[in-house]
Amino acid sequence: MELQPEASCSLVDTDLSCDVTESREFMARIAAEQAAAMAAAAEEARLREEAAAVQERLRQVCERLQGLNLTSTCTFSLRPFTPNSQEQQAADAQAAQVAAEVMQQRAILAASLPPEPPAAAPEGIISCRFNLPDGAKAQRRFRLTEPLQAMYNYVESCGAGGLRPATYRLVMQYPRRVFAPGSAQTLHEAGLSPGQNVFLLEVVSPM
Image 1 (cartoon, rainbow, N blue to C red):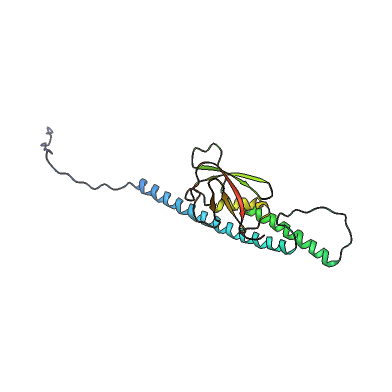
Image 2: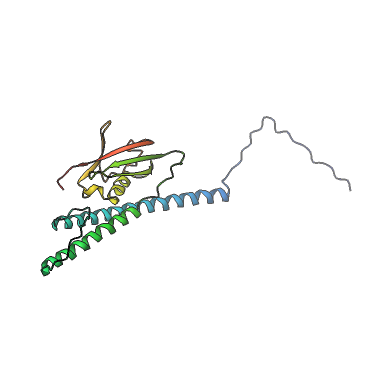
């Protein structure tokens, strides 16, 4: 039996339509990306809440230090032992406990910070130097997508030069710009740009 080709047809000047749907692989990839973005947003929200709780705890501890006539820098000097009254011994023990709590809270606050980006990062990175009131300087790199509050968390993890939380604000001098704590803005939204940024700590209420 001899096979014969089918009759041909012409598609000239003919409108064709077809339905195109995404592949299963493409839809699965989109779903995975959306899930990853939601998980990242949830983790960022959790870190912000944790940092806020640590800040409040640090503020309370520093107030206790002030009530004991101590500074929040937790600096103590050694002195020869002399017999003290029970009240003095209790006060010394409480002061040591509060000092330990301050250091612990600062460590927790430092651990809540996002990892510092490398100096060789291609873009979206700013370098910040903070001139603290006690003469010390602190420096760190941040991503422009990080919240403005991350700078405050870093400064307070360094001791803030002896200032208590919520008693100061970060200020750039030239040109003068003030960055208030608790802002939900990212560093980019706050107007910061890549390069070296220098900040001072300006007291806004009595220590």
